[in-house]
Image (cartoon, rainbow, N blue to C red):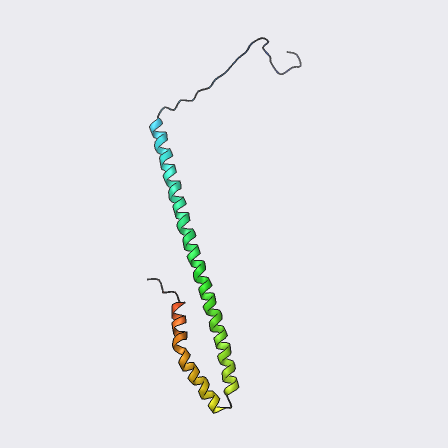
Length: 118
């Protein structure tokens, strides 16, 4: 074996088998069942959180729509008042129009305002 670090055994066909035996199969099985149950709970929690996130995203979109509508309405209202400031008849028409629309606006704001948590 001089200069050669690999030992060879000529003309021998050898097979080595290693077996692992668990001493307590019930304990391992119990632990595996516990791990599986915890993974299922984590997966279920992830699904709940995904659904809650989707609902939250929908509410944010609805609120964004309401904010944009309210901004547009206020800009239009401001311009109507500026245009009518020197014309009493026109100012009365704007006031009448606002009176007709205030209930619809109040309902829209209420519908798009989330309830305070209890």
